[in-house]
Image (cartoon, rainbow, N blue to C red; front, side):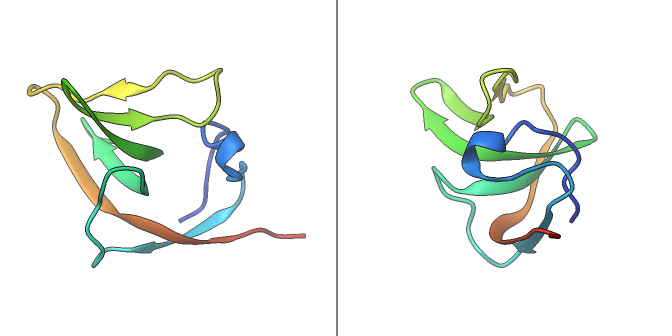
Length: 86
């Protein structure tokens, strides 16, 4: 998957990077995942909170996404590798 955007900048993931995603890994708290939420793909860190699940950005310029019961969420997989063109 090719990254489009800077929401994971502080995790070392830049616009234009390519990610390798493992669909067989269990998406656990703290893992960076590719998620589809309400029809939109995003790359974020999955976090468990006292109120449920959160998709956390790694750039203060981007908002975290609190997962509500009304959201349609599908985790595509866990990011395992990053490829950067030089």
